Image 1 (cartoon, one colour):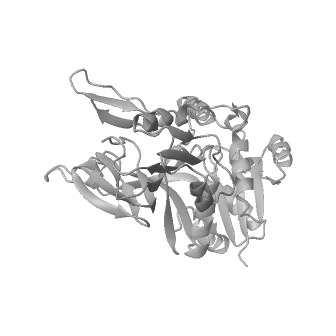
Image 2: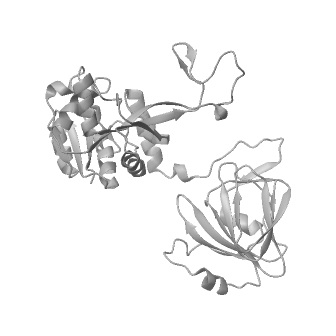
Image 3: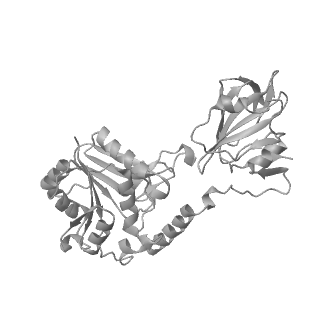
Amino acid sequence: MTKVVAMIPARMGSKRIPKKNLRLLGGKPLVAHVIETAVQANIFDEIFLNSEDLIFEEIAEQNNIKFYKRDPELASDSANNDVFLEDFCKNLDADVVVQILPTSPFLTVQEILDFVQEMKTDTYDTLVSVHDHQIATVFQGEGVNFKRDEPHIPSQDMQPVSSYATVLMAWNREDFLHNMTDFGFGYHGVRGRVGYFSLAGFSTLDIDNEEEFRLAEAVFQYLSSNTQQQAPEYYESKKMTYHSEADVPSILKIDGIHSSEFGEENRPLVNIAELISSKNNLESWCHRLVNTESNSATLISQLPGEGNRLHFHPEWNEWWYIVDGSWIWEIEGEQTLVNKGDFVFMPKNKWHKITATGDKPAIRLAVSRADVAHVYSH
């Protein structure tokens, strides 16, 4: 069985931001953020905080992880990652060592789980986290993923270029030590099988200077607030006749649904057939089943001829499952008849509407998010 050990390096002597790893972010030391995430991942056999300063031993104890005391010489400005990693690998029993840098505090549990799984499943000797950039890139005055004597390529069609994210690195311990013995270095893999694991979003923020620490504070405030859950707002042209709505109850009411239930959401178990039979199916109704920060799901029943208004969602995809009856599904002017059991996906920025048809109520399960903007024309 593969033994996987996490090592979090945290030296005291940072120059650009003094005592960076101890500086508080959201009320706790910077280093504590990745420690908590690594612990929550529950995938490591052991987690070590690696430092020359004993104050980090206290932080390790507070978080129920181990402390590895490195020689102060291995924490100097001249000591690179190879040197202190070699020291660590020589003094512990492990098959795989995963290094997690504390300077990327927004790394997620899922990213750690996926990273370790890829290292183990694909049996890499070295796995490097990278950040993909789909934009024109220049190295030493020459284009990397474009040519000056060719037509411009739109960024969405351009070959991505990857830079090291560095927050997550993993090595087969024996392979790394062999590289150090044979070459004197092993950080990039040298020989053996090297893989690259893409990260995106806030986890790619790496704090190296004061401006980046201030940016991290702003990101932390954003992630800790309700701002990210608010519906986006848009400039509305005084000439164009568009307007945006985001309040689902009022949207459904305007669409002709007057019997609405929004107070029984997020129940652990609901029998859909029993719920539908309990409703007055001689009138239109809706019943929201789920409403969380990531998605919502609402049962909507309408009588033949009823439906919603033509609209689109500028920032969000949605999908519908047809529970019963038939609907005429219109997207960008083209109509399709959908029936019980059909699944309908609606990409963002597509004008669409749906209208109940047939001789009985039609019921659909609408899955999106409660604060998604609906854009209508007057």
